[in-house]
Image (cartoon, rainbow, N blue to C red; front, top):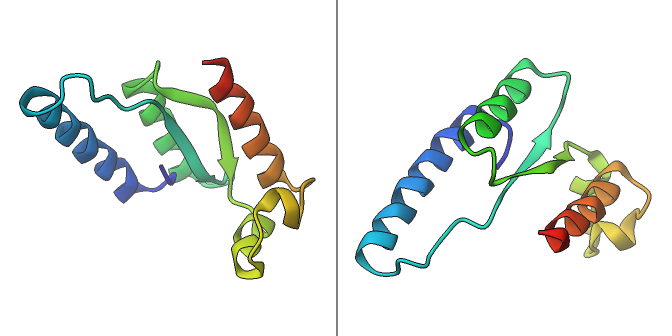
Length: 105
């Protein structure tokens, strides 16, 4: 989720909807993990949102955080994934770390 207030509210709604679907249609449905995105450690709100998500969903939240990164934002406008556009950028490195963390689960 984006490290912003409305995204945090949306996560609560998604969790509730997932529980309803589990109960009524698919008991095996689950949220596989939560990724914190657009994270800027200089912003108090981003720190607070990250803290709340980790507090509410400790087992589901990935440790890897995707930072707010200009190169990451530019890549789609060039029709490239970040790993091609700027593989050494903070965003690309973060996604590579997330991939390793996901595989390890």
